[in-house]
Length: 194
Length: 194
Image 1 (cartoon, helix red, strand yellow):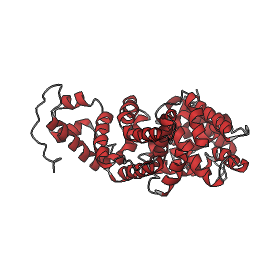
Image 2 (cartoon, one colour):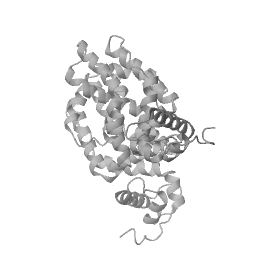
Image 3 (spheres, one colour):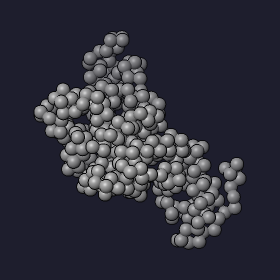
Image 4 (cartoon, helix red, strand yellow):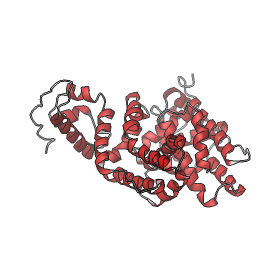
C-alpha cells in the first residue's frame, strides 16, 4: 500500500543524515526487494516510495549497488550472529548454516546473487561488491578466524586465506543454487579447519 | 571480415552433426565472443556469421548458454592441460595458474563470468552452468584430486569436497576480478591440500 500512495516529501538536513529519512529509505528499499528482487531494484523507485529526495539518497548511496549493500548489511546484522561456541569448527558450521538460511529466506539475502551478477558487467557494482560488500560485511566471519588464531587453532598468518576459501565456498554454493543441502557444510568446514 | 559477408548457407545433414558446420559455428561463436563478450553473444548472430541454419544450431545447442559452454570447452581443452607433476600441491598450483591465465587471456575464458551472471536470473543458464559447465568441465580438475587419492595423499571420500572448495576459490577470485595476483595461489592451495 505504501507503493500506491507515497508519503509527504521528507526534508533534507544536509550532509548529516536524517535518521528518520535513512530508516524510511531502508524500509522502502527492503520492500522493493521483496517485490521485485535485485533486477527490479532502483534508487529512483526507492526515493519515490520513501518520499525522499533523489539528491539526498544519491548523496548517501551513489549507486543502486551501494544502497543494496546498506539494506543487505542491516538485514544480515539482524539475522546472522557469529556465536562463540569455543572452537573454529563449531563457530564456522553455525555461522555458515545461519548464512545459508538468511540467503534462502530473506529477500535481501537472496538478492545478493543479483549484485554478484551486476558486478560481472558493471564497474560500479564490482566496486561496491569488492570494497563495500566484502569490506565491512566480512568482519563477522573474519572475527571467527581471528578468534581461532588467538586460541592457537590456526596460524595468524592464515586468517585471510582461510577466510577467502570459506567465502569462495559459500559463493559457489549460492551462485549454483546449492544452499539447501546443509549436510555438505560440516564436511567442507572440516577441510577448511585443518 | 567474415562478419561483413556471410558465407553460403551450409546444408544440414540431419540429426548427426556435420563436422564442417560444427567447426564453422564454433569459430563464428569464438569470434563473436572476441568482439562482444558474453553480453553481446547470441545464437542468431552466430548462425548468420557461420552461414548455418538457425534450426540446426538450436538442435545442437538449445540456448546461448549451451553454445557458450561448447566454445569454452573447446578453447579450455586447447589452453589448459592438467599435468601430472607427482603430488597434489604441484599439480593444483600449476593447473590453477594456467586456468587464471586462460580466464585472463582468452575471450571465451573471460566470458565465463557472463555465464555465471546470466545464471543468477535465468533458469536455462543456471542449468547449463550446473549440468554442462560444471559437469564435463570439471573432469580435468577432478582427475587431479582422484590421482592424489590414489597416491594416498588425501582420502578418496574427500575428493568431491576438496574439488568444490577449489572451484569456489577460483570462482570467488574471478568474480571479484582478483586473478592477476598469482602469489595467493600457492598459499590457498596449501590449505586445500591439508
